[in-house]
Amino acid sequence: MKEYLGQSCPESPILSQNSAPTDWCGKWFEVAKKRGENHVVSFGRGIPDLDHNGLVLKKEFYNFSHTEMDGISAMNVILKNLGQRSKSFPEIKNKKAPSRLENIHALRKALKKQSGANANWIPPNQPIGNPHETAVLGFSVDETSRILKALASRKTNLDGSLLSLLDTQTRELLKNPSQTAKWLFPINMRGASMAADTICNQVSFITLLSHPPWSSHQIQNQIKQALQNSEHWANWSVCSMGKYLGEAGMSYLSKRSSKRNFWMGTFSNLGSWQTDAFYKEWDSREVWFTSPPGSSNYPIGFVHCVFNGKLSLSLKVHPFTGRDVFWANNTLEVIREKLLGFSKTEVSIEP
Image (cartoon, rainbow, N blue to C red):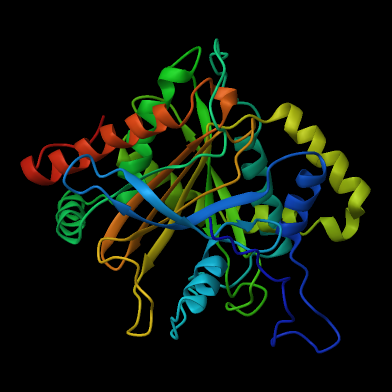
């Protein structure tokens, strides 16, 4: 296994020379790490079995610690190590932060959505396999193109469609499959408070509430409304509260939250990536993948990514749900068939 552990967050050129930016998001992961939680992000590339089920069994890992960087940082750092010369640091579209009063209103809405709606899982009745193993599935360029065109024709996208399908599959693990539950949806904050190419964690999140049946269009509307409400800015400001709380205060709140908040998991979009002529390709079929550390509070970790025109889906499940990588592989295969079937028959993708 190849593994890369990133460097510390360097000084940003947009700040004064006497002030280096503090990666407060990374520090919250550091606090959780000291409490015994996993902090390592599974990250790498692999070759999908395109002639069979698309699963990626041959993998090359470049894991890193979430205490030091996020996925966009990691992709740039690792691709550079593999010869890539061009960089890609996508920035947040609206860099204007809300006023203090607007942020207070946004924070109230964000906290209200985060309270309650805890996922109540069926407890495991047998030993679970490796809790850190990630299931990965890849598509060809042609398959990816057909899927994206089919979704566009329905005025939906990968975020809405994939999360709708994932939520449906995951609900079989709940004591009450019809309960209202919550998903954490990361939001890129690059360029909001420091240079976009600063290597660290520049990510906030919004909360998405699911209740079956949960369509892709409902999900897209929730995302749009949460962003309009500036909930990502509110959560970003909470993240930086560590400067006032200190390590003891952060540890107290982190431990308190771990006993009260139980999400379905994290659903992430790593974006679309294109390599240059200097990149050292492993295989023409290769896709890139990643999955968050995961915990009993965020037991489902799902990430989708398009690399050189090829879509990949990554899924990691924590033993707290009573399932392991075999369930994850099966779930990805179900989602794959739904996507490919949709692109061929032009029928609705809604579960």
